[in-house]
Image 1 (tube, rainbow, N blue to C red):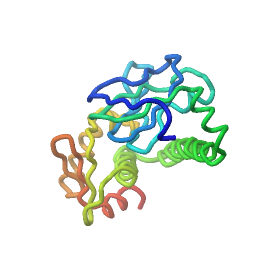
Image 2: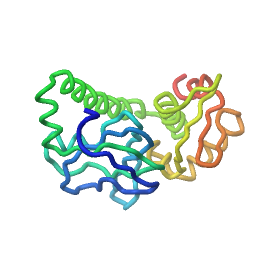
Image 3: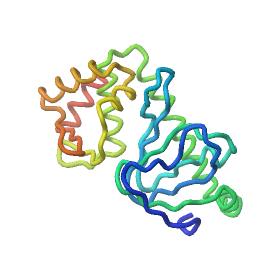
Amino acid sequence: MLALGVLARYPTGRVLMREAEETTFVLILLDGVVKATGRTNDNRDALLAVRMGGDLVGEFAAVDGGRRSATVTTCGPVVARVVTRGDFHDCMRSDRRIAQAVNEAIVAKLRVATSHRIDFAGCDAPTRLARVLYQITMTYGERTGAGAVIRWPITQPELATLAGAAEPTVQKALRRLREAGVVSTGYRTFRVENVAGLRQLAFE
């Protein structure tokens, strides 16, 4: 698939796809981080997912021809290959292994979304935040000893939408986590000082 499409480089803050638009191209992320957001009924941007180098972005619309389900924005410099829907489909038809891999990637995303909803049932806001942070850490964090570093900017409003909580509630919960030595924050980075401790808060 890396031979498909054209190479493109995008700066920080570039909108690559907009929710509800009728484009059908696919992005193969080679380097960098993007975030997918959706507009809520009260006109807030809800963070839906984060994707990094190695991920496909936009394949839902390429598969079914429907409108974009989210807005995708770069969180820093991004390098990707831009693939047309036609080339994407031709590639999957010509190689069954690639088609299977794409199907598995789509199913994995849907499983994560389902698991996310189930995990949040009956949890209070601090627990939901701990579960969100743990999931982000295990998926995208760079492990360093007992901790991990997340090297892309994530805002408190975005954490609030992921955790399904009000921003002031998330601010209080984050303050408690910092005071307990579980997490720390820096410029454009988020560090989990104790992954095991965060997991305990999230699931035990």
